[in-house]
Image (cartoon, rainbow, N blue to C red; front, side):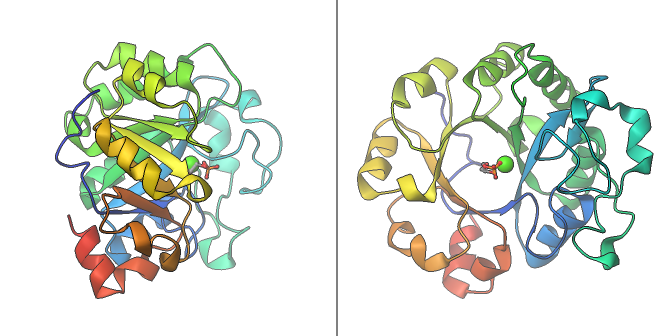
Length: 255
Ligand code: G3P
Ligand code: CA
């Protein structure tokens, strides 16, 4: 398996979709809020529009998190200006744009944040998403050590790996079953599992294989406290302040 770069070590408090309890998910405001709360890492979802533009958005449609409706696959870059990704969350965020991947990477670079980019192909198998992500990362030399690319879709990860042989990759798995061979094939540095699948045996197995293990989505620090000093690599949370306002977690998350 690939060695995890030192930047992807133990002790990461990762803001899920940005600080998405305090600001609308997957927006520039949510990433700024994560930095304001003291997070060093953000997780974000990358989806493609029909014209190939990579944007930061979780769902296959606009309906839940914008004032728009319909499929992203039916939209193009020219449609973004009409979308409001903030009002659904609160009028203080009215007019918040759906950010492109490029805009977001520029912001993260400016804020000095590390990023976990989750690729969301929404069932597409053409691997244009991996190609687009690879192109965006290749244009930013800092991303080689500060961006961890993940996906539930192993084909998308394999495509990303073919474009970027050295990019840190995390295999996403809800159940953490049968992950070892896949992680080895992908030369993954990390495994991200649902909190329900986290246990001591899995931590030991990950350590045995040189894999950095993180868990999602944890909004109660007590759930992961037993694993904090047993090699847990990171915690993906909607509310980084829950952890970072606690000195013991803040010290762990400062690594
Ligand atoms: O990356 C961890 C987590 O974000 C995966 O689930 O649905 O929140 O993207 P989801
Ligand atoms: Ca995600």
